[in-house]
Length: 160
Image (tube, rainbow, N blue to C red; front, side):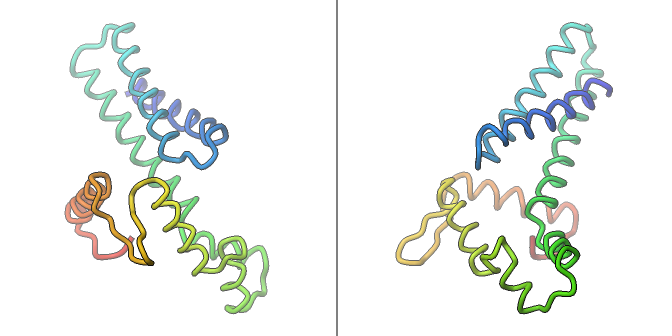
């Protein structure tokens, strides 16, 4: 368990460092960090001669820490609600009209949505042709499948 938690902490630290190095490389930084933490977990298993039960516990703990961190990071960095609360707190009192203009570093909700769509297109998750979007790639299908499965498992509704 300690090895899994330690490798999870390594994941978080390397992700933050790689984000600073890779500029706009969130997915790459996350993959490299997670692979590195898994290698650390397996290396510790070899060095400390863990039995299969201990190795499985370390790997499951690593995966749990990874999923928790991924959700937490996403919520903090990309969560609409947190960002709105932060803007209101920093600029209070603020009107709804001012908030709409200042949201997304001055882009407003429309500009922010456009930026996110462009980012997904640049990463190959979407294609845009004559203002029409398509998501028929293997990665997009995998994301939709995982999202639906996750929400079904947790009995969550639409959204998010």
